Amino acid sequence: MDFPSTQFVPSRAMGTYEPIHQIGMWGENFKSISNPNISASVIVDVANKLENESETTSHEMLVPSSKHDQEASKPFDKIQRRLAQNREAARKSRLRKKAYVQQLENSRLKLIQLEQELERSRQQGLYVGGGLEAGHLGISGAVNSGIAAFEMGYERWMEEQNKQICELRSALNAQISEIELRILVESGMSHYFELFRMKSSVAKADVFYVMSGKWKTSAERFFAWIGGFRPSELLKVLVPQIDPLTDQQILDVCNLKQSCQQAEDALSQGMEKLRETVSATLASGQMGQGTYVPQVAMAMEKLEALVCFVNQADHLRQETLQQMSYILTTRQAARGLLALGEYIHRLQALSNLWANHPREPA
Amino acid sequence: MDKVTRLASEKGVVLFSKSSCCMCYAVKILFQELGVTPMVHELDQDPEGWEMEKALMRLGCNGPVPAIFIGGKLVGSTNEVMSLHLSRGLMPMLKPYQTLC
Image (cartoon, rainbow over the protein chains, first blue to last red):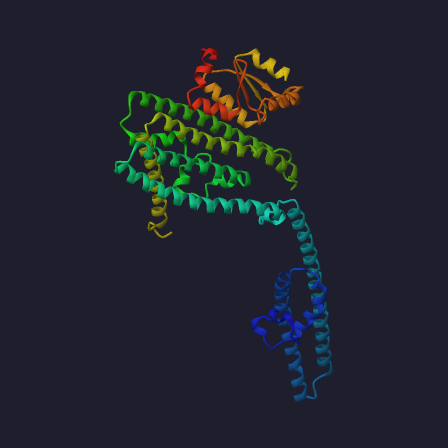
């Protein structure tokens, strides 16, 4: 018979099938357990023990019979003693079988209990291992496609960005007209605004994705503030690149930097308040009972505000770029955009270098 | 509509907010940094809060909070305030109402 439990056969008892057969019969009890792998390991352990016992018992049984042949005049009580020992061994075997079956029954009940709990958790969408995917395939499908669309879009965006940077570089070195340069600057600005629109779209699908900055390189993420660059930091990087500035321009840029810092500060404090609120909501009520659906649902509602913050941060970035384009001349704006593009390249190169540099073995 | 307009004209800088709204909190912080103490009305603590929300939405505030009025006139929500601030248009509007510390 192609016995499925041949997998249970321990390596040191390849020829001995009797104990396995016995287990096979007892196996009717645990066929209803849905996960056969658990029962397998239980069986192997007990099978090992029982097999060793049976081997010893049959070995013992063999010895007296050879002795019996040789010495026909063996006293009757020795035979009686031997029979008593056999009865004792059989009794012990029956007790062990009973204990084994009891153990299997308990494991089976525990397994059914665990499966029910798991099913309940899945239905509540709280199964940590599977995340949202386990219970809400429809919604996660939309999230995943939103993210996939963004990642594809970002790849195209980067390609276009690199093309524009090259064009700006050659335009600034050549002697092109003011109007042509203006067109390049406007394209550059629109290109960034396009990115902000893309981010707004994916933030609706999964705001945590935007917050994580997963589509960016590691060094870019290091400098990120609410899902992107910090406007005031950007000004610090760009302004030295667009020297010389008139006195009025210096004043205007200074004011813009101050306004950015104030706005950033307000948003940062708002974010901190949001963290406190979500944390307090999540931690409310008694802990220790294992029930938390209301707290998690309430925290979800509060977390919706994160989308507003991400959008507002991007709005700040857009306004900063816009204001700079008003303050600067066309040529200065072109140099600014070029510098911004090259700065991002350097960050990406840093990430690359970091990822590949040899490290000391752990 | 009346209550909102009435309250909006009572003080120089008026902010309609909700105590649980973190973006409203951010706007409050900004005004604080600019040396202004707006008159804050928490809609979730007002018995007529729901009517006031509807009135603000009719005026074009999608939030509907935060909603900022300066000199009795609606400035807008967070977007408008931020844009104004970065274009250096906010400070001149707030100047008459800055509290001298």
